[in-house]
Image (cartoon, rainbow, N blue to C red; front, side, top):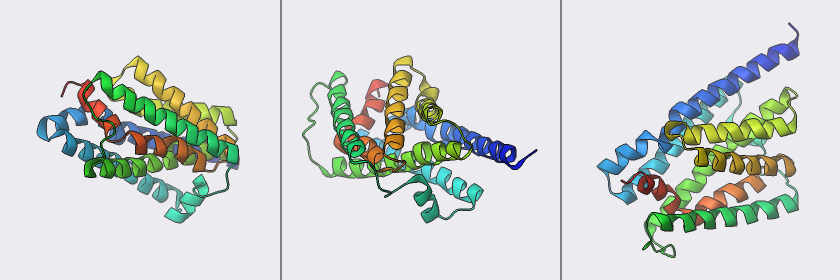
Length: 232
């Protein structure tokens, strides 16, 4: 077996491990965990705990990636393109995507709580937005940066990198409480973020604008929808 074939097996095994951990550690945040938190805490505290769990899950996965790869955190962040130069138009489109996606989440909350005040500025909203933005960044480090770049290293075409990343993104978002509409929604969003990553020369800047900006705008309401849609 030549070195390329060995490298391919190593990469697929590591991506498989990451995929399993995403489903087992992060996935419950979109399934059983909200039910448990919603029954035990107030909605505001439940939102903060769920967002904290999301960050913890991705922190564990990143720690494992560092161990498997032998990289330091700074090396990993350089590998995934955090702070790397990006195409200006990719950043513009990423910012527009973040604005539109954030407003879409905000408008969706009305179907669950018609009396909600989306203009509210409070400590809980600011804290939830910051935690969610950090969580989105960690998510992009794993599902866009690490997964797509490891696939590139074994000569997987760019379009397939985007598709695999998007399917993985949709899988752990929906597997614990599968809904075909949520799955399609996640696939589409994952494809857009992956496309931005390639268009932006594998810099995370455009992706962060398209993802973290959306949660900065929409939190804590987008997380509240997880609880409210379950009738908690």
